[in-house]
Structure formats: C-alpha cells, structure tokens
Image (cartoon, rainbow, N blue to C red; front, top):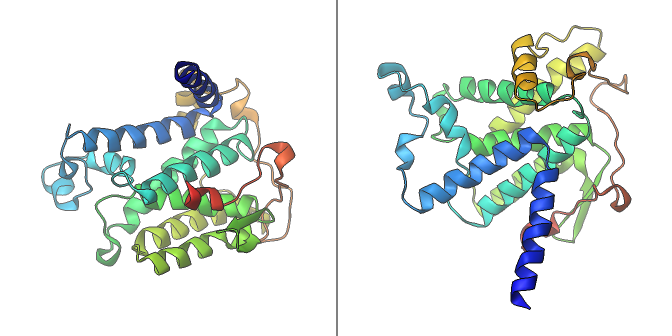
Length: 263
C-alpha cells in the first residue's frame, strides 16, 4: 500500500511539475537544487555570494548571477519563499504574461539588474538577492491581481494589493531582515511604473523586452511562435489600480497564506 501511495504521489507531482510554466519552473528548481547542494556540502556559500570587491577586483562576474539562486538553508522561511515562487510566479506567467514568456523573462532580468544596482548602496548591500527577487514577484503579483482576496493565519483577510506590506509587517514581527523585502518592493514598483503606470499616463514603455531576449526564448523553444507579436495589454486606464483578475477556486487560482504557515 505504501508503494502504491508513493507511486501515486510521484505521478501527481510529476504531472504538476510538468504543468509549470518554463521560467518559473527553471528558477524554482535551480533555487531548490542550490540549497540541496549547500546542505550536502557540495560547495561553499561564499563562492556564490555577491561580494562586490571580488566582482570588481578579481572579475568574479559569476557572482552577479549565482547570488540570486540561494534563498537560505532549509527552514520554514525557505519553504515560504519557494512556495511564493510557485504561487506568484506561476500565476503571473500563466496569467498576465501568458504567451509572453520572453516578457516574463525580461521582467526577471530587469528586476535582477535593478537589485544589483541597489546593492551598491552600502546600507542595502547583501550577499544574496534571491529573497528580494522573490519579493519583487510578490509585489508585481499584488499589482496585477489587486482585488484578489488573501487570508493570513485564517484571521485577517485583505486585498492582494496590500499583501506585500502585510508580509513586510510579518517579517518585523518574526525578526527577519527588512532590507531584502524593501529592495524587492522598490525593484517591483520600478518595473511596474515603467511598464504600466507611465504608459497609462501617456508615456512610452522605455524598457520594452529586447529582441535578443525574444530570440533566446524562441531558440530554446520556451514560447509560442507568436510571442513577439503579442502586445502587453492593459485593461485599465486608472493609474495605481492595475489590472483586475478574479481569483477563485473554480479557476484554480484561489489562495490563502494559511497554507504557508500550516505546512
């Protein structure tokens, strides 16, 4: 019976994993593998950390990338961050960014570049920026799904628009560092302002997805052939409201933070 249960679980997990969109699946998988490898002692964390002195003086440029793949050692916080990738990343990539894989990848790249720029400021400097990148996903999700109802601890219900600030308050309560969260909010708002709010106000999208990213995604066969022609549609003309997507159990998008804390 236990063997049958194990096989059933494997088949269900395999089906779920294959259904994940490519960019979210790749990033979440790499983050998980990075923590597993660290737990097994296969590498030393200082070899992938963002140490600016080594980047500039010894040209260890790989640190500009590898630092985004470590979300911490195995813990409740690590599980929460991984679930945030699976929830917010998937809903973004399969919702607002559906058939726009290149645009989603560019959003991640732009967020990473923004965080690297912010990390130059001494007070914002950190060895790993993965948590900030995940929080950026959370912030953008909250702007794309502002009216979705979320539940914290089964006690407090609020709109998704306020979720990043609620998570920030929880970090204050549990004593977690606030700088990574704040950096994610800044990077997320910068992207959302330049791609949504500024164009809605009559401006131009100055950070549209480069053609190179479209070609990269097309060559890797991660995208529908029509990706480059799918416009970035916005269905609202009111600044600071974002698009409204109704999330409920019938669409498979219902969400409760209680799952994070009860698991």
